[in-house]
Image (tube, rainbow, N blue to C red; front, side, top):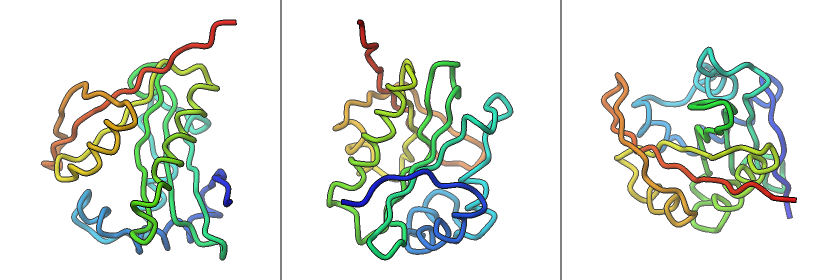
Length: 166
């Protein structure tokens, strides 16, 4: 079974761009544009000023030939110092509906638990109702809805994480 591994800019940029081009239906839904190198760089390394570069993570899942079929990007300390934010979960259309999204999401949740995070948040586009069902099935609960300057309504969902007591 393929592993979920850490991706780094710029070395893994071409692989991420390849995935983004195959999954451009989502990129177009989110941004109204086709993916390009600038989109990939922003996806992999940009964060609000409150999040230092060492708190930005990008994980990928590769097919047997090395091409990515899944990607997740996360920020530690966005919303609150002990919060994680899953900014993007992107899947190759050929891999959707086969459990890979859940596998990658659970990987991120486990990483957050190991980091003693209080919660994981995600923002789901209103235009993507299947994603809301997916995240709610994983236990995420609607927290608020917001609109940025791009006109897209986003629903922020939160998954509280239990602390291990030893």
